[in-house]
Image 1 (tube, rainbow, N blue to C red):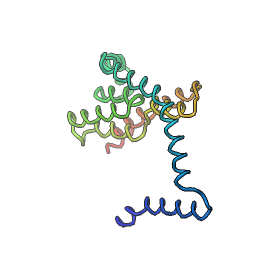
Image 2 (cartoon, one colour):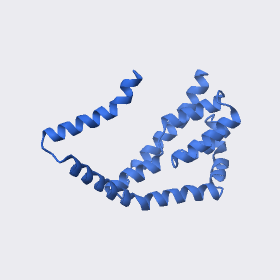
Image 3 (cartoon, rainbow, N blue to C red):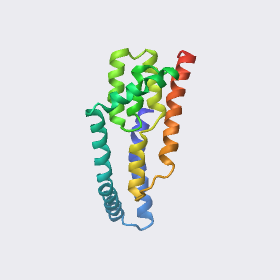
Image 4 (cartoon, helix red, strand yellow):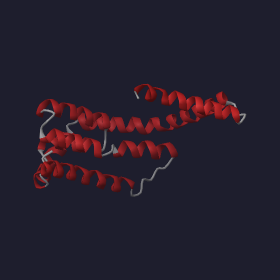
Length: 173
């Protein structure tokens, strides 16, 4: 089975090349055209990504996450969300790498089999880096107004935060 799974992508590439040659298409020229359009998208995304990464680093360096964590502690108690999880929950919609770094620290501090670690891993698996995703997808097609996308995505993230904590606590998994 492992041999077949290692061959899937090369087989797909071969299939695409054979199909293109069969239809008298210039495979290399089409590849170059696709690569050029991909580079144009990357160039359009660079300012958005620089702004997002700058904002995340400023939030971390300024202690903004600590302030937000302190402000959300009463709500966390009300919703039965552990305090250790709050910085992770704050950073998750903003930065994937930042939230994974916080998850790593959390696992080191509380242990990988603890209830908090299970909640954090469930949150990680059931949420998205909302702001990064919206910036990349909307930025790649030139959409400037996100309309209700951010609100809906954050509502989804918030419900995933709450439900992950609720079900891990109730099911005792």
